[in-house]
Amino acid sequence: MTVLFSVVLFALSLCADCFAVSLCSGTTMARVDWKDTLIVAAAFAIIQTGFLMVGWAFGSAIVPYIGKVAPWIGFLLLLYVGGSMFLEGVRGKDEVRNLNGLRNIILGGIATSIDALAVGISMSLSGDSFAEIAPKAIAVFIVTFLSVVLGIMGGKALAGKVGHIAEIIGGLVLIGIGISILLK
Image (cartoon, rainbow, N blue to C red; front, side, top):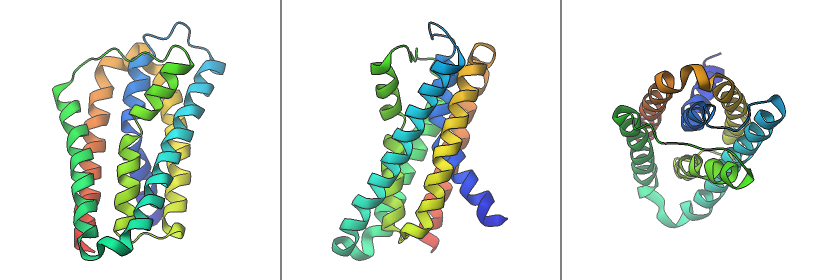
């Protein structure tokens, strides 16, 4: 049960920015119906999971060349991503996040998935095997999909209240994961 909890917590922290963007975008979308919501959620989940796996593959390819500094690089990447998320949440900037149209959906998915790329790299640098990242990638896909659906559908009611809190919590969890890499 502890492993399942940590995998879900990992996925929640990684998709916090997707949730925040979809929450805010729920108020700006031209229409909010199930079909459009599911398309946006699928796009975000595919991009987020893809970036995580590409990052892990890239990191796995360079681990033999950077050896002993790999955990420190992983820690610094997570510290940067987590710290950035935390600061964005604390600053509470209410940027207009528009998910109208395919171009904006893809750009939003990529913008919220850069951290997944860095986290994937840091996971491989810390020695995570494919067997260890696969359940996390599945959880990231499912949790990202669900968080975007919930964010869009609840956007009108909650956009100004929950989005920044999600970024703060997600950032702190990623920093904690970075610290745990150094303690391995």
